[in-house]
Amino acid sequence: MKKVLSLVLCIVMILSMASLVACSGGTYEIAVVTDVGQLMDKGFNQGTWEGAESYAKANGKTYKYYQPANGSNATDNDRIAAMRQAITNGAKIIVAPGFLQATAMTTVAIENPDVKFVFIDGWTLTDADGNALPNVTAVVYKEQESGYLAGYAAVMDGYRKLGYTGGGGGTNPACNRFGYGFVQGADAAAKALGLEPGAVTVKYSYQHGANFSASAELQAQINGWYSVGTEVVFACGGSMFESVKAAAEANPGAKIVGVDVDQSYASELVITSAVKGLKESVALVLEQFYAGKWESELAGKTQNLGASENATGLPIATSRFTTFTAEQYNELFANIKNGTIVPDANVPVDANNADWLSAFEIVVVDFE
Image (cartoon, rainbow, N blue to C red; front, side):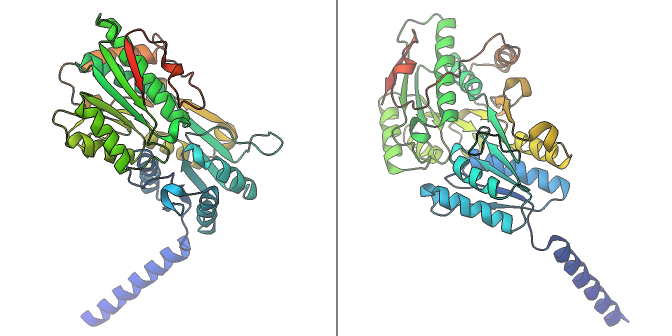
């Protein structure tokens, strides 16, 4: 009898598994096509992936990520191939972070009008006639707000020699907004404290950030900064964090500001992170899509999310400030949220020179 029961249970399990395979067909309806760098980059790719993953798990959806070929040297054709593979595997909606996705997403979206695309940190994509593609929606963030908060907090916490290293080689709009906000916040804090001109300095560089990857050259540069007195560096660009971390570990007392997601878990040297709600916003768009709101709320549109939507800020609960308090942070955040403080986002498309940072009276900018 036991043998018969065991056989029956085995058959039931096999049939159940077969049923699952038949239902899914080996397909994955939510796809994430990564930007350059690693999937678990402690930053942009990771935050986007975690948003898709959390929504899919909570709602019983199949999901998969696709990394374009050639890593940090991926081309538009590599990204196109990854998106096409996702569609071959059954993707109903493709989420892709990073401005480099624009050409590939435009191409594949036009080819596949029934598939939906989410352009994270992008813009409204158009066809050859300038018409917005109805199967693409974009999400952008007010990174200048998070950058402002991080710069302000760092100076209020006692740091006077700051650094910023940005991804994208100075051509990434999000990195530019983060960096510009960081300088504005540091400047505002220095003025609030009544510091003399030049009391706060910022080293500012895109020199080794073109592909957002860790590199020996970037590590050597940041090590040089720390060794001559830079106290905290804002590491703004995916896997670049690893180079900044290695440099900080080699210099006693050196600290880091993380980016995109809370990077406090990655190193005890992270004092805070200039975050944006990647995980939350991806989950939000997926929820809108599956609720049948694509046409009414998403098609051909761009959502610009900031403090008003709790999509920018600092993870104050895990920050490692010594004197800057949660009460000070909450007051500052509230002033940004209600519009009393409006950090400027007006940065040039190509920020590879310091001219646009020359307006600050207190913060002296050393551009490298």
